[in-house]
Image 1: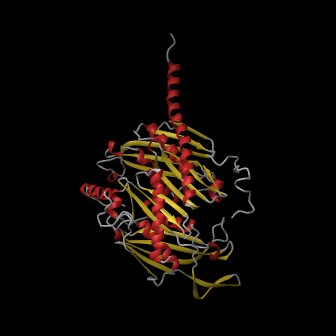
Image 2 (image 1 turned 30 degrees about the vertical axis):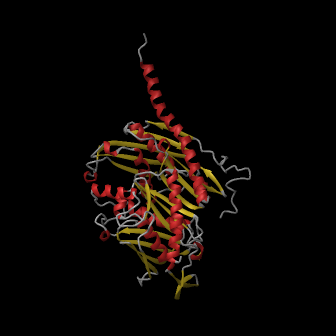
Image 3 (image 1 turned 180 degrees about the vertical axis):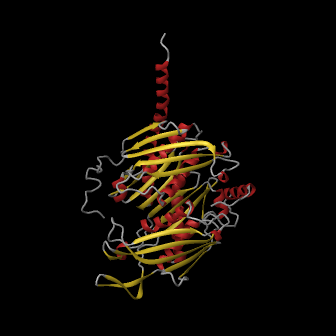
Length: 263
Length: 250
């Protein structure tokens, strides 16, 4: 996911962060401005667009009918896919999903799945035969850093916006009826990514900060304040103490975000 | 979740496979097992059987991936079709793509890529049999294989998981505990540098439980680290023995 950045700029970013400052004037644990808009794609069952600074992610959900997995015959199916659309950054290329988009999709998926936000049993139409399948498609439209947090927020916002078709079973056939019911979410997981730059922890890294970061850790937290998914990324390391510090920062930031988003 | 099934931990704190909460599965390690690879290792971690071959530093293919200032590290985690109960398609799954990435990122902090500009190494991990915790066993084996190839390292990387099973935090989950347990926390660690190079988690844990699980996994890593060093030494002990035998008698 890299674009080029000069060595002078790299040193400048690291030196500033050591002093507790950032290039765009933010504090170390400040998020950029977040704007979320829901329901802007009429043909999707649910949709949301997030602006996190200049990072822009659009998520659409589609609801279909399919077969359950054999080991979970009563559960609906949720699948998350992420596209790093080539128009979003010079470094994104068309073609099959690379490891970055697969990792992004799987982090977003894990946050939703492990927090049990969607009540899978409510998506069951006929046990073992027919269930609702919810496709969550993450579309990155502009890459300016911290795609993980932006995509995770937008995915939950899109699920909150998702309408489930009403149905009835007549003579063993599923008939879709008029009207919709909202998809109930049991919890709204929020994912916070903490980047280690030099030896300092910062939140919401910009695309330039991502170029110089040693490593990142993304922590998904549910409404009760419990941790439901973690992923470390990047070629560097954290000390155990830094991980605990990152976990504390994440708790604080999640509380802040829930206040601003009213989630 | 599984009321009808047996409890994963009994009243005495003994797990289904007979282990205590802080007890690791048995491990076997061997390095230098592949004649054609520059470095190799075979690890049995419980029922997991992992074979790793390392090639390089060598020319990078395709060439445009090579970097003028550093070595490129490539890593492929792959499961054999017969490694799990239901045949796994040999085509790389999304899970395998993600694991290849996080395993590579767990090994990179141990290496000095700037020492080998324009070259690359390939780390090929084959899971011959899987029983929960394959990413950890793969990292343990891959670090051994890299060390065996002679590439300088800051430290060995060693990995172990911890998790929550029936309200108890336990170390080194096997397949049933991984699937039915409440949470799984794989950790990769460089003991001499006190550096965590991989940390993942799924399930639900309080922040305190996560801390406890991480520390328990790190303790597990430290135990496996001793065995790793032993396995590396053993290879050279064996070489010494062989040479002794070949010495002509006077």
